[in-house]
Figure (tube, rainbow, N blue to C red):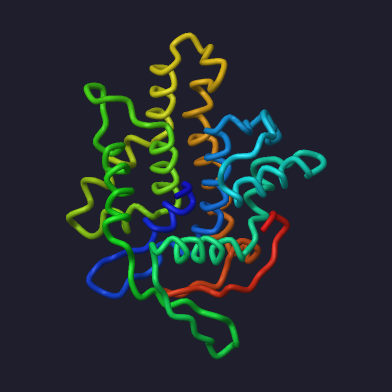
Length: 258
């Protein structure tokens, strides 16, 4: 599963009622950020001062991520992080929904609403698989000076869970409050910078995968997502999409590769 697959799986709240998606208005952009984070961790791209830079155009294993990498390479001039995330197509959530269905991680029923749009009612979730992803997020939340350093990929995923407001689906209700606070503390900017310095005290990194590249993308993505989400709350309809508590519309368009 890619980071985007895991993010969507975590976003499906599995409380006492039927499964529902948490933080609908934030999820689409967070999925796009997950793709960039994964390509960054793979050493394919870097977030420059103003533009996303291609470091290595070599294909990765996942076809969707390969299309994103190709799209970044074809965009002239190279896109800024802000512009790339802002132009996330409405269809991206539906694509990831279909990916999870293909992987048997979700099961759903399709229907047409009064407006003629296709909706997906979530019928079931692969709870053991979701639990496996959640355990990795929990390891990040419980990490500290006396524990092994968090895996960079898990740390990036945890950052997206926090910023996209998916933590209440991961740690629901009153019982999850302490875990949500721990996760927020471990993925805050100062914590990410401290982790970077601990991994690479001289700022030189490894020639194959610089240590800063494995941590700072989470911080940069968090800041950019916060700016974009503020647009959502102030009425920028260009960032909104049609989601209800049980599904979403599969219509929409955008400039990203499908």
